[in-house]
Length: 345
Image 1: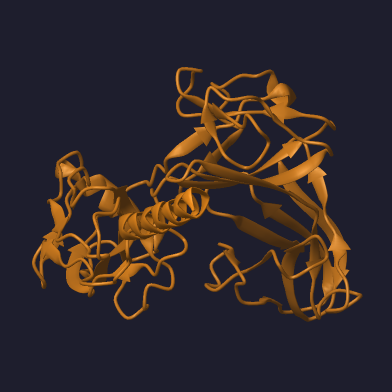
Image 2: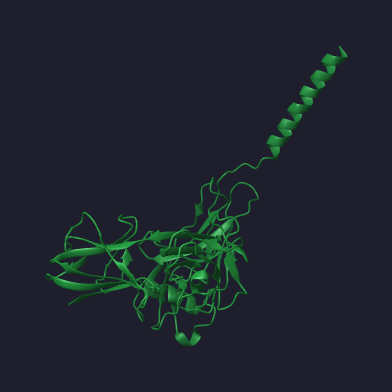
């Protein structure tokens, strides 16, 4: 009898504990998305170089409602009006309800990076996203329309140094760098590592004061972390996201492809690395037709010219070759904005 009583008591206690635990679990119930409160809709900014260091304005919004008191990550994004945020640029990431450190120069650099003409008011849209985890739907604010007029200037893109065994572990070497062309703490660049088993790190600035490595070789970055190791020699596409402290390296081998080449669109004609210029080159006979650049004999990474203006874009338009002949072609990837030249010999 006592044994049955104890068994029943234990079952009741376990049931009570289970119910108590269930009550403590947060319940996600999506409510209101954030609403931008500043600047006001229709705001217009005329950017001037004399005020480049000045703060533009405060960007503020209301809190998102996920049904419980959650730690929310807010991302402020801007894009050209009518682009449906297909290529947004991140202005800032915060757990608060404001971004207050956007300067005139930063917004101007962003507008020029989108190749918007200086001196002409640009129609832009702003939004805020709110996220608590990958398993919960992200809440997105309504878009806010505004205008900004950029000024002409030589754009100096933010950069990360890439010191390593391949260049003497020298963070002051300004030829081994990657760039944030959108000034959003996302960096990309191509660097050639001539030897297998090379190692490298990232630094912000020309010293080791602020540097990142990867302690577990898992794609995450840690301050003063371990050296990042490569296996094969070659040209690597390096990507760094300092907002999320992640990085990626991709070995690439570039070639020329298209109807103007001897093999058409079926296969690449390989390009070679010139250690003197840091460019990829090829001298070959071409037909009248079109060409593009692509990596690793696949279309995952390919570059064309939407201009056509000599500047390259991922998945850009085919490049026309007007007449047959022998050509020297250079692919320039060791710069912030990728370019090319095609010269008839």
